[in-house]
Amino acid sequence: HDMFGIVVFLSLPLACFVLSRTFLKAPANIGWFLYSLLTGLILLVLFVYFGVAWENDSPVGGLIQRTMLIVGLGWVFCLSITLRRKLN
Image (cartoon, rainbow, N blue to C red; front, side, top):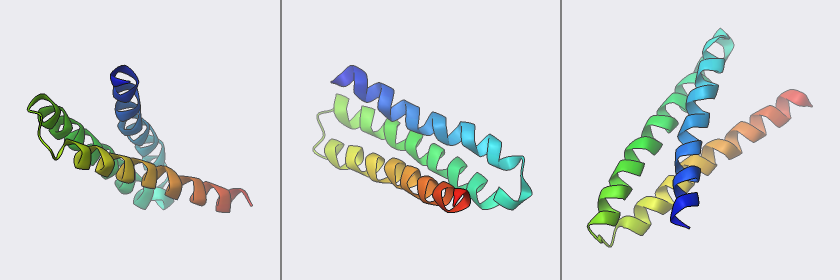
């Protein structure tokens, strides 16, 4: 469980950074560039905070983890809605 958690929680910010570079190439997508870049940065910061909380057996670890999920999956949701609208 711990091993796959690391994969998931590092894959989300990586996807944000990869797509932010793609969005940067089209001036019309500057909003998505900023949203993706900021989401990736927030996810990495939360990942570090979660790691510290986990190592210290802090009771806020679960809250940080769920915040990461909300931020990351919220980005995935918004991206999927945007892509669906563009493809229809």
